[in-house]
Length: 232
Image (tube, rainbow, N blue to C red; front, top):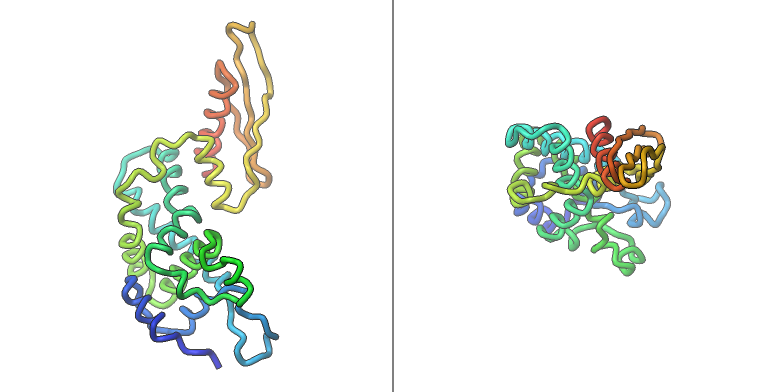
């Protein structure tokens, strides 16, 4: 039998803007894998948040992408750059702290003692899991409105604006759980005072892009920008 959602946690979720209809799914969203220290056959075994995190990540991305599309006429590359910053694990973790999530995450004793309640990775994942729970319990429109409320200051701020393309690409790779970008000089042509560098950037199992410029650094920047336009 699933344990009920603690009253203080139910109140916290409501105060944070969430609407709880099916308690079990919200309990799952707040449960870290370390909480299940016993056998799956034991009565107190609870499902952890990983599946809901997977779902919530996509819902968050769609909600924020929709807002960006409506709010700006920027080209695709700039939209992708802002999206990656706004839905990053670091941003999710910061918003989780802002609403007091650490007190409500269900962790195993050792994980809590090791600082799991203040881990960017855990808090970011649980934030996405709560979004997944909201989507299943209330649908997309309600969940989108909660996201836009919680992300309001970030959406109106400078997150993701004017970020260097190489930083933006690294952030994109981290958010999408990909290998870090690899840059390599494919060719160098011309005399020292007028050289032109062709640089290729690649991410394993994603793809590659290249660009040419009068300096290696500028070519890397243009290649990163081209990669984000193609795959971001």
